[in-house]
Length: 137
Image 1: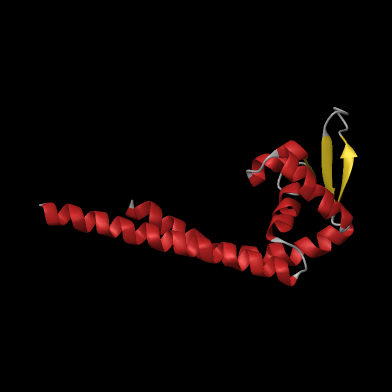
Image 2: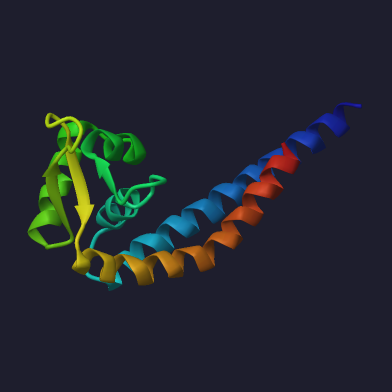
């Protein structure tokens, strides 16, 4: 009976290991793809998240910080770097002037679109790993 438990634990480790490998491979692919476009992976993610909210094509700095799981002041610096590259621009909030909206520029859209397509193509591999991990745990 003890061998069956160990085998089950071993299978769980194998499944989790495979998932972590596939996740890291996806993240490495993402880093490399962004660098080929002349930006960092975080800049790509920031631009992607500006487009990630239903019904609008912008995000607040606070929302971006949440999506990036980063501190607010770090995201402000990242927005500044993206703004300097002409990828995004800031606007005062339409409903609350205290908030800052981050909008994608035309240049940002030209950089983001091929990256998003490339990522979507690779996402199915990661989705399969997630399914396998959820079944194996």
